[in-house]
Structures are given as structure tokens and as C-alpha cells.
Length: 186
Image (cartoon, rainbow, N blue to C red):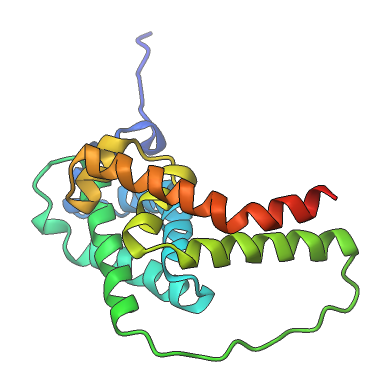
């Protein structure tokens, strides 16, 4: 009785999965979708700072991934895909129409939940105050967990430039959030 080894789609490297998806394997494409959905959405949200636009960018990025699958040349899939995601976000930002947010009711919400939301909003506002290049680098590094090398490839910059942008973003965030952090300590 011979043992057969089966490799589940979820265990295959990204490049192998996408090569299968490129050949029309829907299961492979779905595996990549589930592997990247959270990272892509978080990135879109942090760059666009708008839930509706982030949702639209998320959908557009995966549609473009599927539509342009035949142009994939076998290089690092993650870098190739996040270049698509980044371009979608930049295009949406460039074509952004200003909207007035609709305020929702805060009934039945605890004080701790309100403090958490307020703190989250303050951090989001601080990120939004950063120049786009700094915000993009810090989001890819801190929120999405990419290495300096991967970020450099995604944004088409040198590793030194990425390190400088992250350093400056952290410095600016410390300055912007200093009053917030010290208010919460009291």
C-alpha cells in the first residue's frame, strides 16, 4: 500500500498557486483570495481612510488580479499583486470625491468601547496627516508586516528610501500622538 502525498492549495507558495490560477484553476485563485483578503483590505483602508472606498478598491484589486492574470511573468507574486493594489488605491485617491460622513447613534455603547473607538480614530487621523509616501511605507511595514525589501519592490524605491520613510513616519506619529498618549495615561 503506497502512501500518496497531497499538497493542499493552502500550503502551496503564492507563485505556484497563481501559476495554477493563471491556467484557469478557480480553486487556486480562491486560495490566494483567502490568503490575501485581510492584508489587501487593511492596506486599502489605511491608504484611503474611507471604508466605502477601501471596499471598492479591495474589489477592484482582485478583479484586476483576475483580469490581468495572463500578464503575470512568474516574479514574486506578492510584490506583483501589491503593485496592482497600490495602483488601484492611488487612482481612487486621485479621483476621490469628498463626502460628508454620516454619524451613527452611540446608544448602548460602553465607555470603554467609546474610548477604544476614539483612540482608533485619533490614530487613523494621525496616519492621515502623514505625507502619502510615509503613510504608505508605515502601513505596509507595521500593519501588513512586509519587509523593507518587499516594500521597496512594491513602491519601486530603494531599501534606504523605505527605511527613511518609515523612520520619519514614526517620528511624525510620535509628535502627533504625544498629547493623545499622555491624556490616556491620566
